[in-house]
Image 1: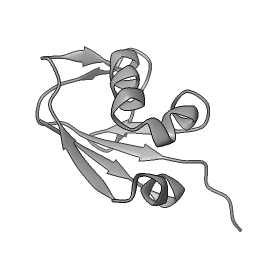
Image 2: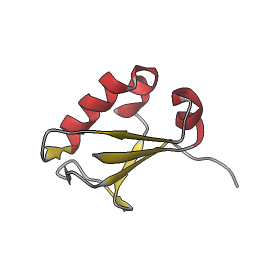
Image 3: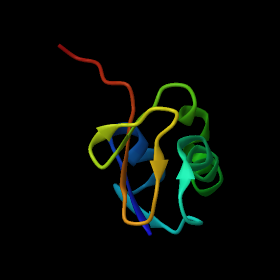
Image 4: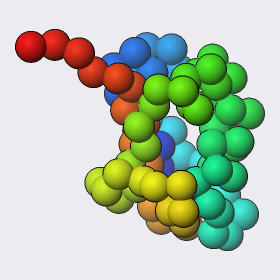
Length: 81
């Protein structure tokens, strides 16, 4: 199981701030994004465009591997001053 944390407008769209899902072993960030789009279609349009993803509180790069027990946070664009 991995824990997914949703922040700001993503939390509002999904209707909760956290979810747990099972993944098949170790997967790449790209594979994870595909799973997200299927599991949470209400935010699928944001996944490839504007969402930053962190894994275990480190920003994820395209080569990041996600595995059982990881915490993944989805961070929409922030603005403010």
